[in-house]
Image (cartoon, rainbow, N blue to C red):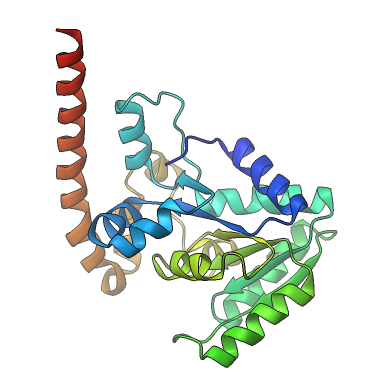
Length: 245
């Protein structure tokens, strides 16, 4: 987990894009951490990311308790406009991959209204199933031919993270997994009030708005994360005590 700020993350992503680097950025939440805990394959995905931001406040609080006082939240739906604005100013072409056709269209309208000079070189709404090898090949060719240097992915976790990992070194762009940012920015899903986001209660709002999709995730992951986080803090404090005695 990296302790980058919005400004630092945006600057680094733009720098990689200018260099034509093929890499990916993960916006990690509690669900991401627990998926990595449960799956060695997903843990490798997270480890190979060029940058992993703290998308949720529980991770920020944990990092601060572990001795990283500068840790701050870098939330996908807020990082997206920051990177888009920087790309527009720098003349860096971007692309979008994910969401339904309706969501993607509304997102592109939102982008055009706010950043009319931004070059959107690529946009694709993939099928809600694993793509065939031929479909995947055409997607790679399309992104490469478009010249997009930053590719925003609006899939869910861990799907988008596995996709970015599988396409690293196959797509000459910085891939940025932003999850529900497509829906939030397009206005197709409600976003939690800022006070709930800052107090770590965003998951309550999302559970209330999407109970059928999210209840298993939160019921299974959140209590285990709390136990594992407390255990890690206790181990850290114990090790510090041993070193000082």
